[in-house]
Image (tube, rainbow, N blue to C red; front, side, top):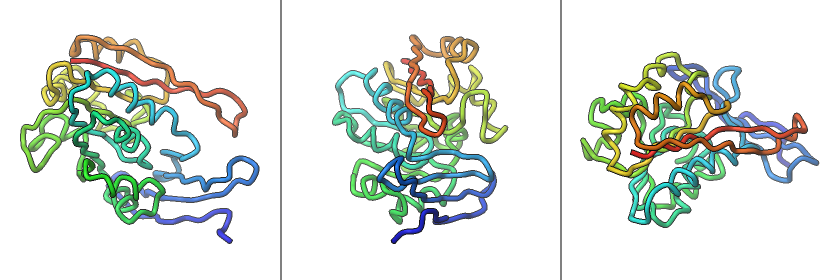
Length: 239
């Protein structure tokens, strides 16, 4: 019988110790719960994935039906990436992830969705800083095709535009960096962003200086630990 709790892996990274854990909570769910922590901070749990999946669904729904090349910023436990691959319009997908252990968990199939991503020929992992690549350094998102442009960029890394995992990310959420990223989108391309906070008027205003249209969507889901409804936000901006 599997233990009720197991730490699968823990390793140092440039932004802190990252760990992958698995736990069982009888009476709550019959499935194992996978968790990712950075130091003492929870990054993701497989128990709460509705908003991560909505990031792909809402972002890709804003595109027309032509074949789409997609960038996913932040691998996490793979839910945003797998949700994107469920859309038949997705022709090719790059998943950009800073932390090498997170990519290895998926390649080694230490997490449940690793097998799905590994089996889909449309998926490719890119190890690097999304925020550097977003502004074109050194070649843009695709190291094999410098200067390549995409139909959609789906971002789920920081907790919100104001609650950052790394203070070095702060400059990305300003108009100049957002405009630089938008250069890697085709016309009518979409930038979608997950946030764990309510819609922020100041960030929406910054998006509107770069994109032709901006919408915010509140995603509601049940939190069994607090026995109440929780929310997240998905921003969808069209070039």
